[in-house]
Amino acid sequence: MLETKRYSLSEYLNHYKSNGTKGLYKRMLEDFFTIIYPKNDSTDLEELSLNYVDGMHDYKGDLIKLRDAHLKVSPMTSQVRFSAVNGFLAYDEILISPKFMKDLIGSPEPISEEHIPTREELRCICEHLSFNAKALTIFLVASGCRIGEVLQLKISDLKLGESPPKVNLRFETTKTQRKRWTYLTSEAKSLLEEWIRFRGEYLRKSNEMVKGIVPPKVDDGRVFPFTDDLFYMQWKAAVRKAGLMEVDEKTGHMTIHVHCLRKYFRVRSGWVNPEFPEMLLGHIAGVRGVYARYDESQLAEAYLKAGSNLSVFEQSDHLIELKEQVQKQSDQTDLILRNILVKNIELRARLNIPNNTRLQTQIDSLKTEADKIPSLQQQITTLTNEKSSLQVQASSLQSQLDSMRSENTGLQTQVGCYQSRARNLSTVMSPLLDLPITITRKNNMPNRIASKEYPGIPLG
Image: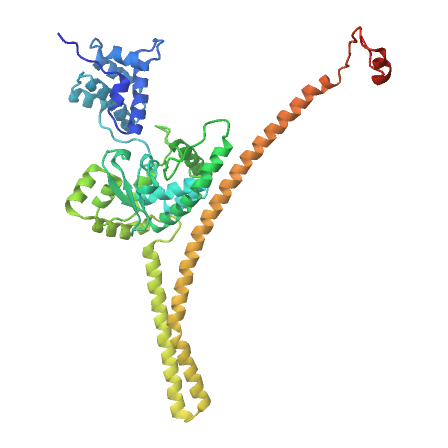
């Protein structure tokens, strides 16, 4: 009789393509084996996992132990934990009935309190982020992507020349293992282009700061060449500095966490058709629904209408359009009043002061000035656009300056440390320099050496 092949933990994890899923499930299964083997000294997960799938364990009882050990965990986290364990068992053909799992887990409804930030709150948070973290935050808000998806993007995945700017997500980088695309706002595009120009300098300075401590970073072509842990640390600190830090009492999670940016994308944009954001977010039902009924041009048009509300620092295109309409109407009204004034003067001239050359000259001058109004309006519009662009660049440069100041503080700390070490070394060496020196004279050494060339040095 052939022996059934058993699969180890690593073999089970390797059938997943996403590195994020592999890492998450590995942590969940490590925790599970710690509960099942509390007194086992072995840390070899491969050995423990192979021993566990021998068919001799009470698997349902072990799943109950896992549930009881994490009663205070949120239902969503609990569902992920049981999915990892149940998937591992199923991979070794140890099947647990769906009814048992449903009764064990219950309804995976989220219990953690969370708060989707407003535009003003996002602005406040971004003011406390470094330039790289700010660019990533604006990217997440504008695109609706998961942070793990964005951190795997290559520069070649960006199509910034299109309208709206397009982001292609490769299937191997998405949680659902399905390729898709999304878009960016003009604000996100401007910050992203500025970040890409600064990106090489960021890598160089990062390598200089850790030189000799860790291996240097290699430019792997990613748009944001850093880890999610680094971003999470900055996000948490920025939320606290902004005075917005609140923690859910039941789960201990921040109420304004990074994943809220995806919900901001869906809730704050004012989408006319709810299927569009679901597709851009990468939800399976949304992808299927949009692909079945709409083409890419319709999706791009919908984003241009709704995506204007995703700008954090710039005013929305809708508000700008309204202001332009109001300004246009005001200018038209002003032109009408000027024409009325000119006609009124002409009428008075004809009625009261015929053939008045000076008055006619004034009328002609007013007409000339009135003809200049459209040109002046165009200049005002151009200057307004240039002002908005300069404000974005100023914000970007200020962020770079803050980042460089932070790096300078770190370097000053290192210099102070080295100076302290030098002072300590000097203190140790000082007594050694004051010790007397004794020279032993060999039998055949001339006495003149002691008497002439080295006076005062005792010879032993």
